[in-house]
Image 1 (cartoon, one colour):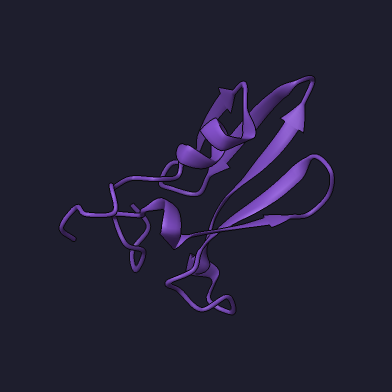
Image 2 (tube, rainbow, N blue to C red; image 1 turned 90 degrees about the vertical axis):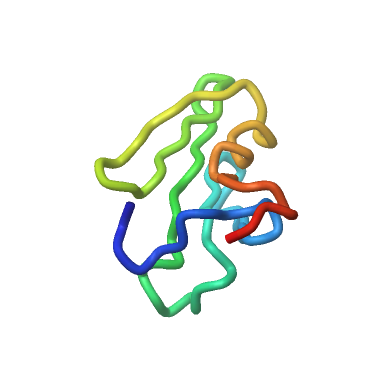
Length: 83
């Protein structure tokens, strides 16, 4: 866990920005975009798979077959879960 970042994120907390046809930046919309802690990770489509890099300590990597599954990787809580 990176100090200063919430341990829980719902899908609504995520801000997904397309950087190109095959790259997406994932942010936490609860944190100001000028704060580096708002950057949660990246998704890159490579050879038909969606590769995820999440900025935790240590950095984590995963691969998925769909963009939606890759985005869901960053979700750590359900909308009704207590914080």
